[in-house]
Length: 477
Image 1 (cartoon, rainbow, N blue to C red):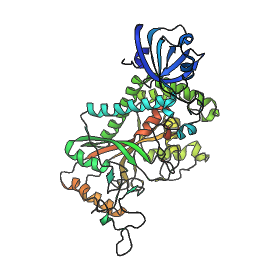
Image 2 (tube, rainbow, N blue to C red; image 1 turned 120 degrees about the vertical axis):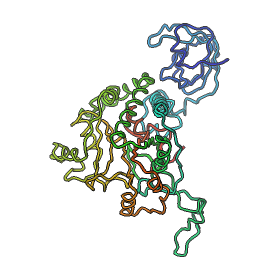
Image 3 (cartoon, rainbow, N blue to C red; image 1 turned 90 degrees about the vertical axis):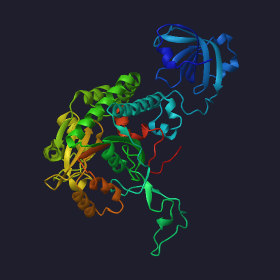
Image 4 (tube, helix red, strand yellow; image 1 turned 135 degrees about the vertical axis):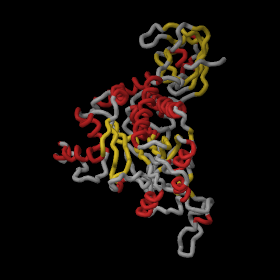
């Protein structure tokens, strides 16, 4: 018999006869009431068992985590909290779950414990909600760009270039680690490696994306990226997903318009589709906040924070203006910031970004025209010779969520910048070709998908918004 999803049963407009539901037992009370969930919704459906006519052996096997199939009539519920329930006529145990050792018992678990059981944590309400929201957000990303006529491009995961110039990359090799071939001066001879050169896992698809934008007009990438950065923090992952649109003939202002419109679209789309999950996570967050000192609590509840981004135009502020604000602000003067702002040219930290958004402007902020020496080589140099056409979008509670720029389209200027930073022209010959043949103004940005999921779900640790987090000293599962 074909089963019906729990979500569809709960959304039914009428009672139904002879329905079948399959899922996992969340709780079993009084030998009579099963809370059944199949992952389609955060809400369980109550299944009422006729325990007097059900074998004792079967009742003992209805444990938390067990997979079961129930058949019966969908009837109006006599209990509070649900509109319908299933009056069970037939029950089958599909897969047992030993209650003595199943880790996801119906009680409060720490997030650290759940990370250690990442293969099972999605069976909890919180992680079921997070992963459904992640899925909807992912679809919203594609929907936005496809509706706007962007071309989806799959840029390489294995690459010979370092887009950021940071050098914190995972090497890819087929050479034996214990005895690799060597050159005459004793270095590893990558000419004998699989690709005949040194290769790495990508940190960004941007450079390859630019080449496609200069032929297809507007493109986007959405794929995995990797950073071998030894940052064991709540905001960093070694493996994460990046959304990177690139648009020919767009200047920095067009780029800011695109980023703002895109973010507001995907958040609204997800709020429209994931109401129950977001309400649950908002309640979870409010409970969590109660245990914090008043000063550490969020000023806004989750849905209020999401609406804050939808209802407020993003304030556009130059880096220079931001530095003046930060230098003169009370937390800086009283040395409350961990990183004191003394002079122009400082690289802003999360505490500074959050102050601008949450305390000073009280709306999302786009900072632009950063000092050239703290930004990447491919960003367009301004006429002042010391700033570049870069922009970062700052959000409440999270700081930077988007980084982008107008790209340096002038061949000579780009080459000079690469020389100054010691970046090989020979290695990036193909990238320079886009400036040799039909160069034009173009812009793009990168958005770390997990940062977006973090913001939308209200979670505070990035390891909790990706199915299996990869971090320093952790590649479990």
